Amino acid sequence: MCLPYFYIAGFPKCGTTDLWYKIIKHPDVIEVCKEPHWWPWRQYGAEKLPTCQKEASKTTNTIGKPQSSIEWYLHFYRTQGAVKEIVKSNRYKSFHPKVFGDASVSTSYGTVGNFFSKYELIDEQFSMTIPKLLYSATPNAKIIIILRDPVDRYYSGYNYSPYGRTKGSPTDFHNQTVEAIDCFKRCLLIHSPYYCVHHLEFCKSHSHGYLDKLPLGMYSIFMKDWLDVFPRNQLYILTLTELRNQPVRTLRDIFQFLELSPYEINTSEKRPVNSRKYPDMLQETRILLQELYRPYDQELVHILNDTKFSFSSLNFPK
Image 1: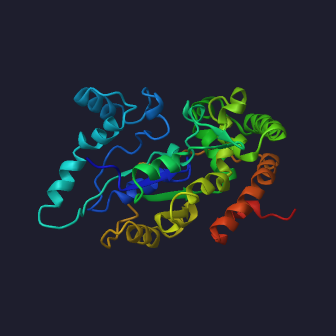
Image 2: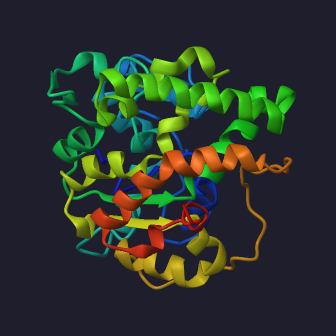
Image 3: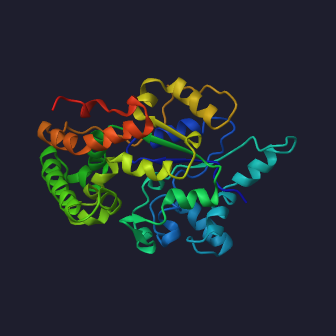
């Protein structure tokens, strides 16, 4: 049995789908279902998820184990033929030249469902996190995290949500954003930033299914959880801008990070992406979000020691 060799851990609406379909073009990467969402969701009882339904049902029917069990997660890849492909590729070699990954974006934040209700709070920080669980099971895993300007990420998520698709508008987004920011600030009056960022349900009543995810753009809070556990050389952190503007070089670096053989993909090929056109955000909304996210972006630049994470829209004069 095998656990994934690599994870595209997130974040939502940052280009993970595009990145995934580029990576699996490498001949030594086995294509499996992209987002089983096992670490943050399925292992805590969430079985009726919209992703990987066919593969999940096949796994459950094959082994008769609940989706919350580690046995189920292991067999999830076996039933897709990943293990068989690895064994086949290993016939004449002393190592496994073929690998597979898990690109569940929820792995980056893992705060949905009953996850955190199961763990103790110590000074408003949880005794267990998704990175800690992942490291305990597979300490050599390679983690890829892709980030995007948090203002654009948030607006993209709103427009991609079922509500945004049918009823969304820049004015509605502004009104809901004002409510969501006010709610988050009320949380900060009582709790620490770490607590408020990890409790997405705190402002659920304002969300229409998405706006409760306002804190997901506060990347530095989540990145500290990953950096506290995984060695820096097991984390590859990039931006959506890099992937869009320099796809060949970016993929070359990622394949090197994954210790795969050099391979150059055709980046001009059409591929499945989660994108749609929508009207521009109101400038007053953008300014509100810039002011909210700027301190977390500055902290991100500091902890990663890299100015490429200083997203341009957050750097306007005060």
